Image 1: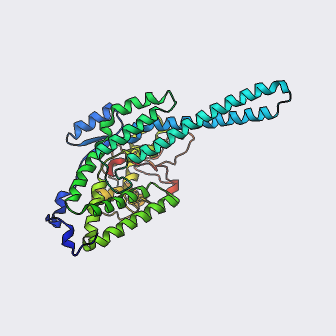
Image 2: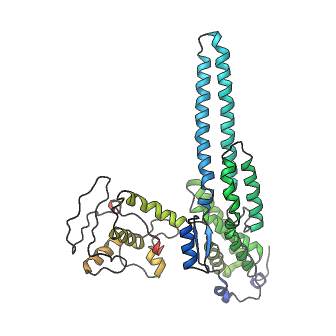
Length: 385
């Protein structure tokens, strides 16, 4: 694509008005817990609820793990049958041993085929749920419905009696699964009003590889980073001085699409060990301390590296590390609303052995760890994520 001047790339819409056309939405992704969904819908009547893809397809991926274990067990049985046949000492036992081996071999072939088929189809299913196709186009509801319908039919044909049972609830929830792609269609229409489709596709592909780079490691991560830069360079060559604001616009729009409750699951995963170690004895002070740590500690990696959740929420930079801020907060003797629920607050090292009740006076705070690896409250709260 060649353009004589920049003005031929855009419609008559003023680029200065782009902020008025940005996609803003309030939404939440979660499992189908009745209380959770009802509470959200009551609190955010205009918000969008999205079914979490992890929970929707979790049973299928767990079934894949089960079939994998069965396949390895079948391989072991076949190997044992082959070993028994080769070491048969009596010719009279050879037919019996051969029959046992053939039976084990047939069972092994079936077990491996079931696993391989489901594994391949689940990889295709996962790719079909990406907002962006491999060609840089945002997927539509119709295209995703067609792909999922076909993939679910192929999964059902696998010789496994458990799979039809697992597919039944997924089929009944398909409309909820398509919610993010409805947003993607709307975003695509908005972007086409601002720039040609070729540039939209290039920036969408750049966002796609940028998104995947944070979920990958090693060679795969470097591949996505390379592809992202290639498509950004391509778009920049066509857009010139308009590149940065348009790139920011596309990335912000696509980042706003809610697809999964990854943040909540991350919080649950990190906080769970501390809750499990003190079942029935967790206090509000401990929860407040976890919340303070999460809100004020800085990310060590990812797109938010060097920023604390509270900084991202307020836009104001923290003046010190979270430990120093906590000590300062404690020394002031007047806990704020984020920590206050009781006059007593103590930090104790986390260990797997029972601890004795603290004898620290209410006016004192004991802080023993001196490095972040020693801090026992490495859990996260979603308040300021």
